[in-house]
Length: 174
Image (cartoon, rainbow, N blue to C red):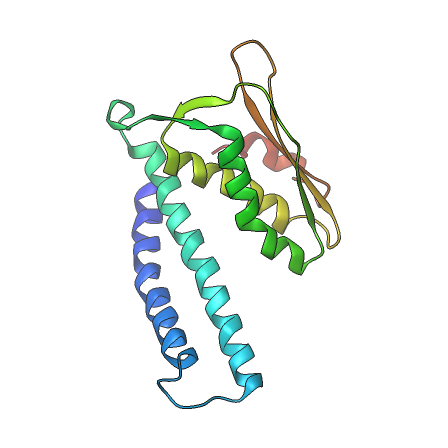
């Protein structure tokens, strides 16, 4: 499955990059003046392509999580609260389009963790993106750093959306 996912996402990357470059050419006026309504549509196409390109990039990172040798992963210290703030800020525009509020609960405790920053960003982004996608319009998504026990940190992302069917729960982390 991982090999297929990596291959499929590589196949999708190039066409979306091409579409994005064509959109930029049009929006920068190299094809002549475009009417405001057309500009609005082309801007929406560009925004959707960016979202899809980001999703493809994240799929590649997540697919590589299983195939990477743990010893080869370069870990570095990061502040989990700062990383979550970055992820939340990235998802706010999409959430706002549907009237969804993302609330990042303040955390003031020690939050330095050793991780691979790009992989951690992708994981946190995937969690938050799913919460926004499956929330009802006008809903609330709550994000928090918690300390379930001494020397442990956990991240919770809670939405009030459609939920996960019981038959799928055993496979959530597959």
